[in-house]
Amino acid sequence: MAVIAYRDALNQAMTEEMDRDDRVFLMGEEVAEYNGAYKVSQGMFDRFGGRRVIDTPISEEGFAGIGIGAAMVGLRPIIEFMTFSFSLVAIDQIVNNAANMRFMSGGQFAVPIVFRGSSGMAGCLAATHSHRLEAWYAHIPGLTVVTPYSSADAKGLLKSAIRSDDPVIFIEHENLYGEKGEIPDGDHLVPIGKAEIKRPGEDVTLITYSRSVKTTLAAAEALAEQGISAEVIDLRTIRPLDLDTLITSTVKTHRVVVIEENWPYCGVGSSVADRIYQRVFDELDAPIGRVATLDAPIPYNRALEASMLPSVERIVAKVHEVMYR
Image (cartoon, rainbow, N blue to C red):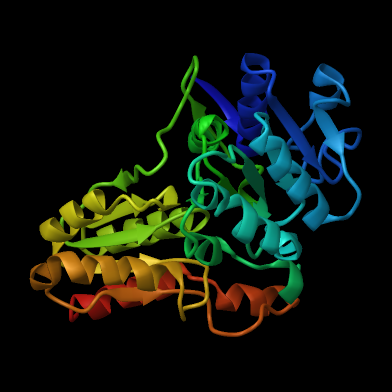
């Protein structure tokens, strides 16, 4: 298997799908001649030309709407937001049009479109450029929300998203673009809606996604040195949620902690905990623990920003709490 960076895995996914299907095209700010703000579309303008790799003005609502219209008449657009924080400008198009069109038209129009781009607290980007919007979009029926952690998932899930007949919110953590990992050979696809057990364990279930997988795996290693066996689950997809994998693990360990970079109120963790409580409340030996970003706007200062994120120390402390140690 080849070892490539996360950004190159995304590039491979888009390139392979554009080679396979001439209805697929990429549109966004600086995606063409500049090769993308994070170089995810490196070389694609030279390969496919300006009709399929399209630079746009700084007008997120405009090009999101153009993409939705193109999808409704049979094309398969990939819309890149330079950062998902900017998608707030286009949220009316995404929520009112992309998510609702299949239902409001009685199934006459599908919207096979992917909205993708960077997200998260990436280091001194401050409050307006550090949003984590997966919980916002996962709130909306009609949208699929994907948050890949590894290079293999970045490629396999993006290819599945491009082939989906419904709108997909594909959120890439900015700090993962340079991370490298193995990718299976061939037409690598990862099914949407299927979580992955990254590390098996017996004593506690740690549920997380995106960059927090890395921190959670490090916490699991620290817990192992203390004699605690932690099972780490990467959700991969926030909506639809792979509840079966979460329930199976909960029934095995009887203790759960959810880790995320969202703020704690109305975050992904609260909905995951609710689903588990509804299904297997009697299997739990302790209330579900949560480790989230501290409940305040994100500061510019690097040290202050780091202090807000889930850390190995905070995860270990929360595991001790649910194990009454």
